Image (cartoon, rainbow, N blue to C red):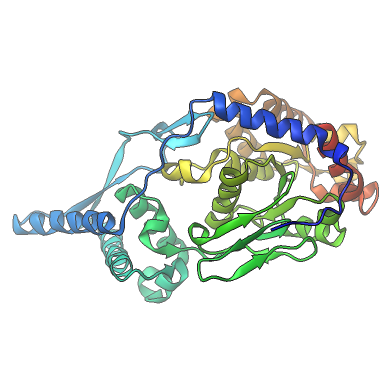
Length: 392
């Protein structure tokens, strides 16, 4: 599909094009991506059957059955590779979910309940959302987070990406710009520069992706994303793509960013608040999270760069102090936690920016730029950063 060029002259994208060339060159010179775990439906079914067989065997011996889960909440189980991000080590510490323990008997039963539902979905080649599973028995599960956590535990236990369990997430992300694709059901989607469309719920199923975009901009917050649309940012800097996960990104938004990188090798940038929460969100897109480290190869995009808002921009742009917000104790703890993470050592410029924030003891939202002018973000800040390579 061809896209009309309505943006700046070709010379505007010179530095961006050079950046893209360097990214592709790094891919060629690097170790290459590790093969991703794939699984057929029959393999998933056999894995579940083996778990049930072990339980039946234990019962036949008059022994209390248990399930063994990798400990996904322990940093000691995580290793960092610059080309992948945070990933779980092969032989990590585990925890037992015992059927005869008052503390874990209910969780044991819930895991088996959801395993049986997954088995039926895979066997019948049908799909359900996490929300669908929760609503099958609201009283039993209690709340949605219980279901979400168990599904991730099962995915980790079976050593397969969650999509092979035939369980989908409801997308909350939005995307706009120069992009088209066909969804699994045959629906043709043409994203535009003026109106956002929802991120698909089955990223694995989309095909025939087409774009001539020069870059992809990840926007932390929906309000900022909508403001960029209102300011006609996508048309003014066409061809480009912008996407938001509306805060902490859902799985589908992360999968789509990963798919766009794998397919087109576009330069990808993040626009987040200059605060610990915004930095955390950027790190999730780039290097992954502790909880989902077992699926890092399918989710992380280590080539992502930090475009803004940088803590150093606060002084550089003379943002008034009355638009800044003091760091809370929780903010300071979050910042300290991020500074101790393994990936910070290979990002000295990021570390410097976080040290500036710690020294200022202040944070700034992207909206602080409106003190200069209401459209400063889309008219000056982002175009200048993109044209002259103002990313780290």
